Length: 178
Figure 1 (cartoon, rainbow, N blue to C red):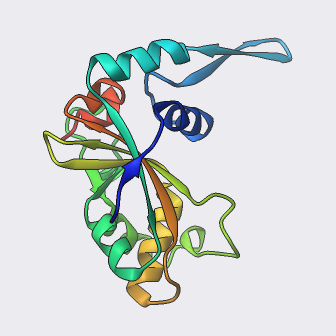
Figure 2 (spheres, one colour):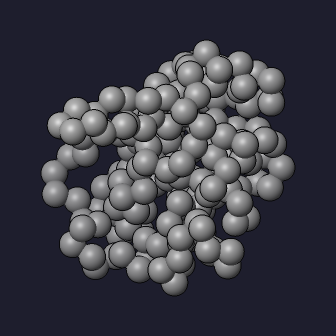
């Protein structure tokens, strides 16, 4: 896989628009009757500053072959947990993408019906622990992993990744189980 630089702002915008996990950049909403008022936990400028202060960087790569996807999938863990656990459970254990894909191999929700609407997968990579966590794109990654194993289609995706030894400060809940 060939990684190249990605502007931090691009990563933040993509992650903010799609992720449901708890992270410092998460957008939330306050409901007042019929209205939903968006609320930022941390502003974009604060996030950009924090990325610089704690030494996080961002990068991207494109995957367009069986071998590239296999290398990527083997390095990934999910923000889904074994045995029905959640991040709040002290004994929760993150699924590896490959084992989750095996469990979902015949699940109709994880079989592709047409083309994906998005080809971007958002990850965080802890360089100290050597752990990569898929933040957004778990379903697509699971489908691509099973298609690769069956040689149905050549997997294609673009990975946007935030990385460094302090990535757990941005995604505290899901990196806490490594």
